[in-house]
Image (cartoon, rainbow, N blue to C red; front, side, top):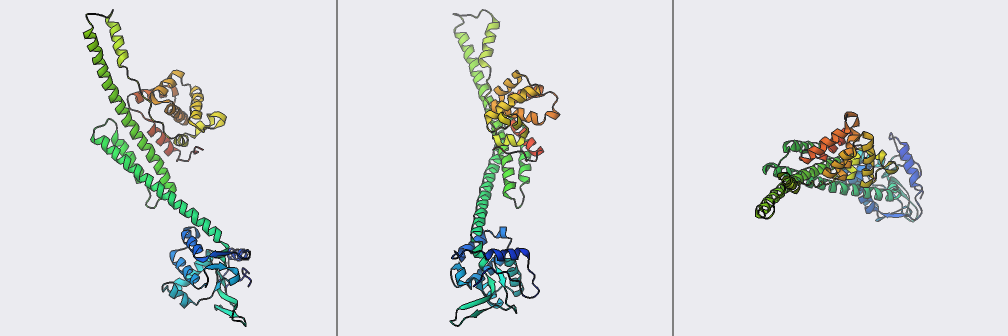
Length: 404
């Protein structure tokens, strides 16, 4: 039997060029090709969103497949089924006639079945002298066989996308929980900082989650939520380090006083000035660098810094720090100002701050003074990189170039 010959539907039904193209494709099915009809059906169900069909249409397709006698779709056995609408309705769980016709049309439009109408539009099979089917008129399942690999690939993509959506949603739920509880703990225990403002940022992020989000929606909010979590942790670490340094300073001062008292009869300093200098040096705090934010987020917020990296790109933190040195000089920031920033913020965060300053260069008159001011605020725990990056991400619409 010839399969895939171009035919047009009976009566007033029109034919589209897409349907003609589909019929031509089924004519190219390789000899001997076969496919498990139920596996193909499951793939079609998995990819129904891509195909643009509804569950009821799939129920009709399931009913059509039950009229095909074998489990393997094969051109040699014929691929046309010819049930009446009444028979189809029964096997499609009693679907109404008008609904049945609408979903049959949807299956045809989706390229999953083809009409092979007789001269009078009736569905039947013409048999030969031996009782075998010589030719049948009804619905051809040839598109399912021709597109078996395509449907399997589409099903795999949909499954992978669903898994990615689930993983991203879980990660956002965990990060959201972390941020909420960290803010609550900081407020309840009286940690220093503008936690009311941070809570507003948190509520703003959660309020942006759509009712029916896509993976892209969740990924964008997850990145910003992770940045907010890092910001909170950095602030808490700064406070803890500050408390530890204050405690160590008190202990050191007591130790010095006790040592001076015990040895006052044996050794006296030549002057009070020298004694004060020694005490000051003993209790001077050392600022520990804070954690760096992900490089990809920095580059997304500050894409301009890429042009100053080695070979015109930034692919690592080393590249970013090299680019920051070039930009620092270009913006007129003194080496000492940049060195102070590296000591207080850490080399990576200092380079990221320079990238942010470059991004806002048109709004900053004195880049060196601006960097020194941020460094001074960071020393007092009044500045952290997170809000600056988040502001640039929002200003850029989060469309900056991603890190490779």
